[in-house]
Structures are given as structure tokens and as C-alpha cells.
Length: 143
Image (tube, rainbow, N blue to C red):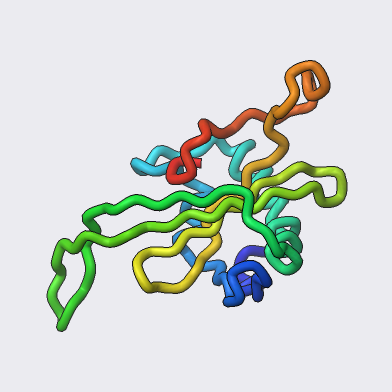
């Protein structure tokens, strides 16, 4: 399913968001190479078509964050450490009854790419009690 998506044009970003191996790996592993439990992996993969649809129609961003990090890059055939700015964009919507947040990531001047989909988190304790699937921490890099 993930391989079939490839890319989607996002009206808010006015550019294509690619679905690459980095995003797929993040669906399987948290940062730090800690594997997500199988139920969480399958659930997030099942929701991928909703991520595609949200990115296809969204004209607003609900969360934006960035930080600088030392990353290994290839320059002239050599692997070097460089400080890069890493951007995160969180898009939130209710699609087909699912409240989802889709996170798009961009490293430096590179392409936007799908990073994560987070399903049905709690926003109102009384209303949402028993209706949530908790598998996130609030940290866009880890989730």
C-alpha cells in the first residue's frame, strides 16, 4: 500500500509530499530504532489512505516546529557531519470519522516527505473517554 502512494501535491505547502522509505521506517520504528508494537504498526499503515487524502486537500497547518541537528550527509563522495534545520508540519482533520494528525518533515532545503500519522488522540477527556487509541507522546520526531 505504501509503495503505491509515492507522492501527493499539498495545497498548503504548494509542493509535492513524497512517501519515501524514511516515512515508512518511522511507521515501523520509533526514533532510536525502537520497534513499535505490531498492532500500532498495522493500525497506522491501515490509515495511510486518510493521510493521502488529508494532504491532498489541506490548505492550513495546525502545528509547525523546527530545530537544528547534526546529521551525516554525503558531499563530494565523503560522509560529513553538518548542522541542518529540520522542519515539521502537523496537519489535523477528521476524515471518515477518524481524527488524525499527519506529520510532514523537511530536512534543510530537501523535499517534503511524509513522516507519520497519529490517530484519534484525546482532546476532551469527558467526550473522548474510551474512544481513543493512545500511541503517541506529543513529540513529532518520535511519533
